Image: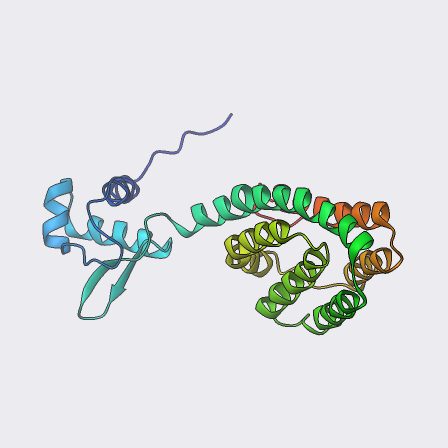
Amino acid sequence: MASVHRESLSDQVSRLLLERIQAGEWEVGEKLPGETTLAPQLGVGRSTMREAIRQLAGRGVLVSRQGAGVFLRALAPTDDWDSLVMRTNIVAILEARIAVECEAAALAAARRTDADLVDIRAALASRDLARDDIVERVDADTAFHRSIVAASQNALLVELFDTFAARSRDAMVQMLALSAEPATDADQRLHADIVEAIAAGDAAGASDRSRRHLTALRTGVASTDDGEPS
């Protein structure tokens, strides 16, 4: 039989204080009233108030500064943002990238110039060298995919890609940091296969390989519901 877990008083106070924060009572960076002010407002003692503040600090909402007080750091707990970023925002952006990049890869195979191919191969090599640092890895991967979109000779597709890349960069860095998933030779080979299809003028092959890569990435992100990498 499942047992019923009662919410502790400090948990209740933490929840109530978070509700006030999310209602806009304080702005990010603003100093909150002291324990002696907040505790009577919520009908609890200072020790309970202190524990509730400690809980919210541990979740990334508040920050205590020695001798200065408690300040609002974020409007939502870190775990809430992680969930939103990894399962909602990133999945939606990857779905949009599939629509843009698969078509761009096909167009690149048909329209790329010799100079475009040099740029794409250089970006592929740079991507292979950026395995050890997560930020460099995300930036190098983005530069590689952008070089393919640029080779499509379609300025609107480039603009759309740049929009997606800018909105997802920090989230992708965070996702890789949380999953601790290493760069692999197999992943690099998959990207090399896309390049070879473009070099050969194989529009269907370039599009298909691009779709397989991005679909696998989307599936991996969407399956992190339990907080563990797929």
